Length: 229
Ligand code: URA
Image 1 (spheres, rainbow, N blue to C red):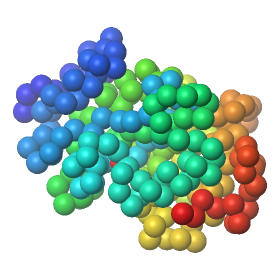
Image 2 (cartoon, rainbow, N blue to C red):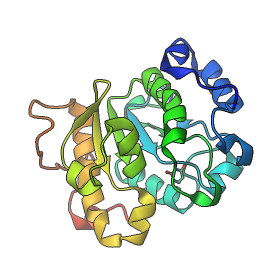
Image 3 (cartoon, helix red, strand yellow):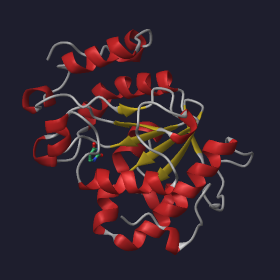
């Protein structure tokens, strides 16, 4: 394979346009052979929220935008419940930038492989550096593996504030998982409320320890406020 990302060092000087072009040209792993197009990311370039998912699916591969399928509709509903959107302009405090750990669709929606995640990670790292979010929301196992280097289950990592490159990071379930496991939506809502608390106020002393979720701005907490579309 050619055109490797060449590590985060080589990307660390790239601006948005150059980074987007580098992703579009990437042939660092075998996923370049089967992709329709790369799926770079979407949202406000200085959004306070950075949302990290897993990898494009069929619809994302076709449209070139992350989270446009069923999981994406749930994600948008969750964001709406927090008065957030993926729009590129407007108030950065009310915007999310959305990106995946992999920029290309794994064929048949299989799980990402370790070498693919390793090759693609520098792109995500540079996106995070450019956005400078107040808060990263890592959704699902592969986002957590990439950002926290942890194989622990989501259930054991959620409910507290972690850090990625100094940025507060909250772990939650992937929306595709939530579509199959409706009862866990209540837990995901708790995670979003914790994330909103951190995004508004910054991580408090005592992060890394269990923190109670608090109500999100403009929305009441509890099961009735779950972002069920
Ligand atoms: N699931 C993801 O993790 N990312 C997408 O873009 C779509 C589905």
